[in-house]
Length: 157
Image (cartoon, rainbow, N blue to C red):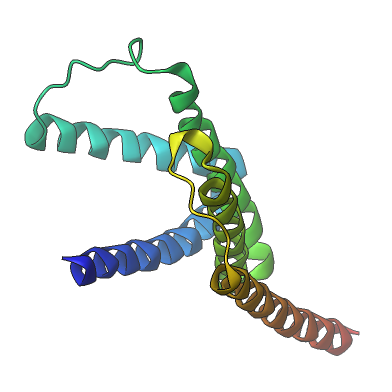
């Protein structure tokens, strides 16, 4: 079962990278906030249809869940605006690695401290190393992007 779960997660990551690129193009045409709105509106319609056809009704409602759990929607907006703004400027790869770096750092902190009602999973050397390697990947992609930008600027003069 575990390999299937990781395959699904890899697919989810691949789809997010494609979504980032698509939303960056959409944002360049419509504007950052409008692009995010269009994406969330379409997502809401699709999610409603999935919920209507594939899920049993739940007794939980917007008014019955702990209010702090609703902040995830705000975080989704922050992510979408950041991606739509960044991708046209730094490229999909750099934006994706930066997002993944932020996700890993926050995930490690959430696990380590047991925040948000999660079980504690203390940091260990392999977790520190994974963060360092990902930050190294981000640095390499940033340097590659910077070199390309400098070459383009020099060629334009």
